[in-house]
Image 1 (cartoon, one colour):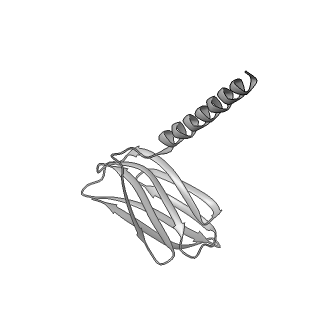
Image 2 (cartoon, rainbow, N blue to C red; image 1 turned 45 degrees about the vertical axis):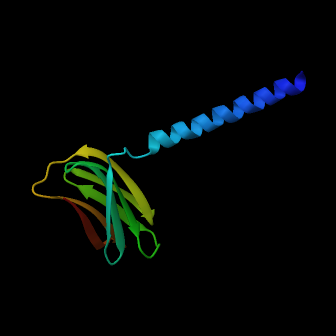
Image 3 (cartoon, rainbow, N blue to C red; image 1 turned 90 degrees about the horizontal axis):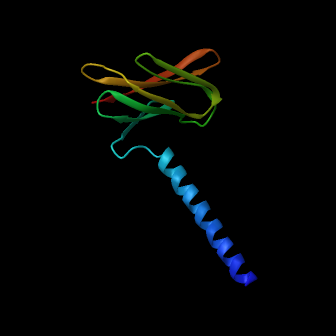
Amino acid sequence: MAKARRARLRISTVTVAFGAVIGLLLVTAAPASAEVKSTCGTYICVATAYQGRDYVQDITVTTRDGLPGTLRGFVGDYRGSKANVSRWRFVVNQEIRAYPRLAVCGGLDRGGRVIENHCVMIP
């Protein structure tokens, strides 16, 4: 009797844990309609997830050499920055109108100097 109860408890614990992991993945995953576009410059790579032509979901900026710096993500009236990292994801979640194309950009600053700004063009 005790063994059966322990087995049921173990099964229910595993089921709850598995359900929590699946739920977390569904919450953090990009919607099925999101597209991703990326490009690299000399020092940084910029990737963006977007929906349609005007909705920017996020911007990911990564240094190519792996060294930290001040990374920036910007598009339209959105500005974000994070110091001393080699990779950062900026959550934008904004509709930004641009004609004919939208430029989603990232930048790298080191030692108080702008090293590179690089943009991804959304068609």
